[in-house]
Length: 309
Figure 1: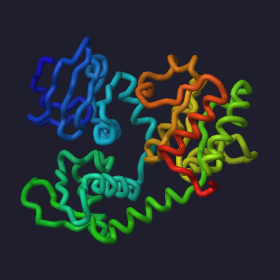
Figure 2: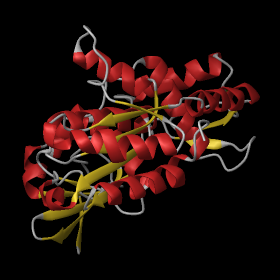
Figure 3: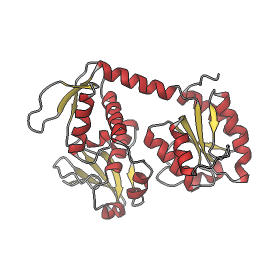
Figure 4: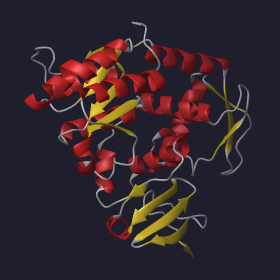
């Protein structure tokens, strides 16, 4: 790869000498941004990128810190990835920031450095001022403690307080106490037996309650039922067979909430997965028995057996 000085990140639009670009392969470029971290971007996306995209910046940063590879951004990604996440409330952004600080903390009492310019994505914030507001809010709530006075624009030294650790534990416990598993899949008659058989069986056997929005009669708006159902769930099972847009939306919403997602697709439909999602680990199933066995094993390995077992 040929290294070039970029100075401007195409995603967050940070202008900084630390932003670097290398020609990777074909029409793709490798960027290393102190705010977004590392990503590949196609020339087509590079040309289309005009304004800062805070949600995409936050997604890239999160991906870098939770995956062993780096994401690749296509022209479609500029709109589709941000659109798959909800507009988080200020309280939700504070929770995300606190969780990210927890991830950076090796042990209770450890001081963590937060750079107001570079760490904006940790709170899914849009500006340095917004990030500072959430930090001060967490300090006011006694969930964070400032370890030194700030001088100029140096990194902030902060640590999670005892109340902060209690809050994180209660938040995690609240999630773990959920017994519902939300199922996103095509409602077609061809896949009804897959829902009624292997998917329900695997989830129930693992100790959880399978839930699909069409399973119960209701008069509410379907989108509200979907969002409410996902929020009440411990994890989401998404079967992408038949490539329904709703499944992509529901998986994206669950991912934005930080819920674990188990992705499935029938073997003959794997080639049709959208390129922005086909890098994830999928259960590629051949028949109902194969799906039930793999899904059960995935749930037990990733989520753990529920209280119903």
